[in-house]
Image (tube, rainbow, N blue to C red; front, side, top):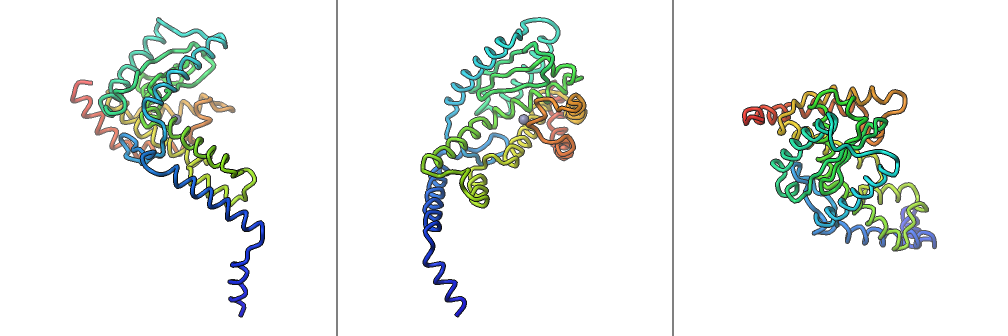
Length: 287
Ligand SMILES: [Zn+2]
């Protein structure tokens, strides 16, 4: 008798339950549409399936616009762009080798990019970035922390890998998907914790786990690119130790969005046999 009572109660939901079901249907339907092909693409080099509604051309356009804006903002903040000198030449030499290796290893995506590197004279900023489409920058604050060219190559390789793996487009697509849900009447902030988690996980959004998966992917692909460019991949270990040490009490900007040093070093050690094989092959090829 008791079980019958339970069934009856389930079949006659209270008013708030009906509202909840209605919203859940909207969420699931919208998420299903968003997650359909052809918005799913494969990440070059890892084969991971990713949700990306942007075309490569869209990303090239957006990257170009963001590049102009970012450099403009740096100028507004009083920083100059180096066009010569030892720091400029070092970054250019290392980044050209990284871009060449990226084009070799990921021809389908990387060869469509307009790779370009700018050195921003900002000794306070320990950072580098690569926008969708390959427009990149290194801040001079990174240079004393990357004590060897191989260490600098690992950072530039990591950033280039974010662009190759189209992480920016992926992130924007997930944000757009969430916006569709919102405009369908779904208020994430008003949903209960369980529903929030379901939606966030469905979209791969917002959670640290998602940004960490992008970070591991960039570490993996970036290490192989640096190795293929002829840089000793083992330098990745002291690099991340230097980056952590450079942070002191407040970690550098670059680290604040990146995984903890010990997690990262453990992972890099796991990747090292693969990277060493790529490096040996690169050396045999005269790189
Ligand atoms: Zn990163």
